[in-house]
Amino acid sequence: MTTNEAARPRVAQEVLLDQRDLTKAFPTPEGTRTVLDGLDLQVRAGEVVALLGRSGSGKSTILRTLAGLLTPTSGTVRFRGEPLTGPNPATAMVFQSFALLPWLTVQENVELGLEAKGVGRAERARRAAEAIDLVGLDGFESAYPKELSGGMRQRVGFARALVVEPEVLLMDEPFSALDVLTAENLRGELAELWQRPDLPISSIVLVTHNIEEAVSLADRVLVLATDPGRVARDLAVDLPRPRDRADPAFEAIVEEVYRTMTGRQRRPARTSPTVATVPLPDASVDGLSGLAEVLAGVGTATIGRLTDLLVLELDDLLPITDALDLLGFVTVEDGVVSLTEAGRAFATSDIQTSKRRFAEAALDRAPLVRAIATVVDHTPGGTIGGGFFREVLLRSFKDDEAELQLEIAADWGGYAEQFSYDSDHDEFVADPDRHGLRTPPGDLDPDPTPGDAVAPRASEREVRP
Image 1: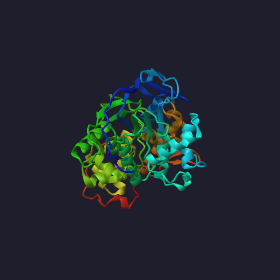
Image 2: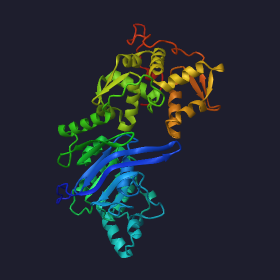
Image 3: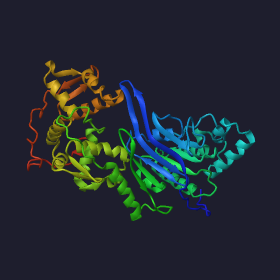
Image 4: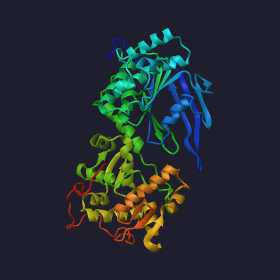
């Protein structure tokens, strides 16, 4: 696909989609879980809107309410001022997983939506051929999905959405299943498509977890808060297309989004943190120790620099920084991550000293790890059934979340040499050589002593950031 000489700038115009005070809750075995709460969102003709947030912020739920596939628990969704009462015929969706029918050819996959609308065979063929040509797949009309690369299959998904000529194109992380180079190529092609005067769509709503992707493609970036989801920031991207990622103005917007997403809200004081109020971030010991070692080498770094350096997506990096923050090993302020003295000592000490420092921090700051360690230390035989803690966690977490909390606790407690998990008997078992449980916080000097070895621990234990 080549840049169209007749490309013209688009100007945001009338409101097409309007969500007001939107709340969406889903039933769970424990009651209901509110995913979106009091969300206000508008999409205007002539603009690309990116929805950006951590996992669990309700990005895909928003997309499906705009499409009329989900009914709000409360609040309203309107298209051109009229309330949606079912699927929105003015929208079409591009999915992350391609969602092609393997027994149909490219042409037949693209025609599916038209066939469902009752369009005649000749008209279907004509419009499908135009859409296939628009996305650069002419010549592959008779190919089957298995014969196509990932990028080509996603182009079929684009063509299938475009052929029904929607006013609003909804895209749910359309590039995340592709390799880096293919994804970057398709982003560029989408940006070129958006500038074409013959593109039938008026607006695009893009769900993504990639900040640079959002700033590269969107006119507005909506940063979502989590639990429950709501718009925390509406950032305008007033940059000419095509956008240069090396442009200081581009980099400034990217950093502003990072700061918004990683900003720390002041937590209400709690005299007694619990396993429910201080959940364990989804980060392995290998991951958090690896990141600590990276920070010990590079010094203070922005979240943006770390994602580039480690070739990680933001959703993969944030739980690790959250874990280090919980343990007191880093501070995160305005998107900048800095090792604390305790964190530097953890990252640079020999492995046994690092384990002791980790044990002290986990027992002091991670309530679930402390609770399991305390119980196994005071039960006959030093064991406790996993069902006990599972029952406690299920009062505050869904089933899969409770299991994840126990998995993380087993990983952290094992490295801290406090307890292990016996999956055959569903039991937590005290480590016979456990240390640090009764060590008062602060017993260890946060600075490495002259006797501490400072050889990198990555050589002693595999690190998977």
